[in-house]
Image (cartoon, rainbow, N blue to C red; front, side, top):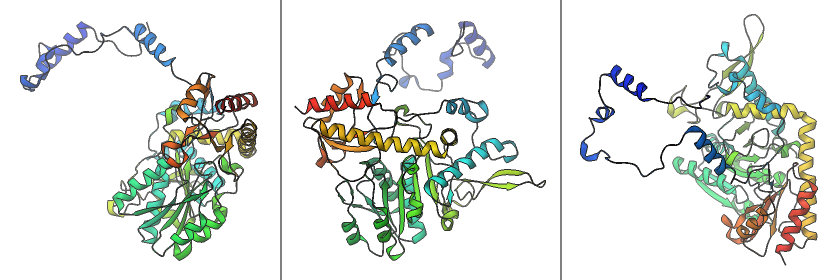
Length: 448
């Protein structure tokens, strides 16, 4: 019989005790005073056989609402996108999924090249000069960018748009608290950063202006206008971007961004309960030596053959802690590989086509919802997410949608009290016309 674990028999236990020289298992705990030892039976279910346990877990798992049987319009940072089948095939190879840090380049060329390709593709998407080997997630990357800007400019204040993902703002605030950095929120207007308010907030002590593109509401920020203000008095411009959107939108690097961060989840990384993800971090050449994490560089060996090595590791593992640019000592190599494989399988044309489909289907959904009597809150250009106003609590509406095998949108009232009963809907390339029409019909009926 095939076991998923190694069972322990009574004979195994006795042989173990004989080897270590004790008669009973209780003797292993003799150093613990009897007064604090637990004496009795724990109030838990009796142990089940493997077949019984698997049956019970399967029943519990079947209660989950998954993306195989439901159409998802839930985004807010984690999206249901097409994954080329080759992704799982490659990342399931043992030389990749068991790999950790490629400290020995002579035996890690495959891993190093995979990371190098990831860095290269991120640079092409963002329009930046240099990208690192990945970070834990998009929010972590964004916060690290804020700390880099403060260290580079020797200033202790950052301005962050209220249209940035609330959880990303929370991470930035956590980082800032430890570094004694002041974080000030920029108001929003019609779903995007209020440029007029930003202009008034710009002072010579601002290290950086931080925005999201597309932002949390799916709207396209006016980066050209914001960039001009951000670079006032030698401040820096930090942009968090959905990398898939950059297949169709002008890259932030072409619009003057100093640092571009984001999450590679749209490429080859499933939603999987919200993680793990893979953050990316890209900068201009002048900031190359201040990038957190690690970079893989391309070189040649003594025989002139191409090779890859870790380089510019300005981390506290390798240099004095007080000189380190970051305390992050690892990266998401396996997820970065998944993203690289997905981008390679799609190709430049495929990435652009996928991005355009997101735009077109979201536009179709917007029109269908308006025709069904719903109000779309913001009227600016957007990528694959937009906000609709409902007359009922979002939680109630989403419960009704589940009955139709639809996973509804995000309840914006959780973080934005002024947007109570507003739903953030995500429409990706995987959503069909029938699914969108069903959503519009159900939401429209809810408005009656």
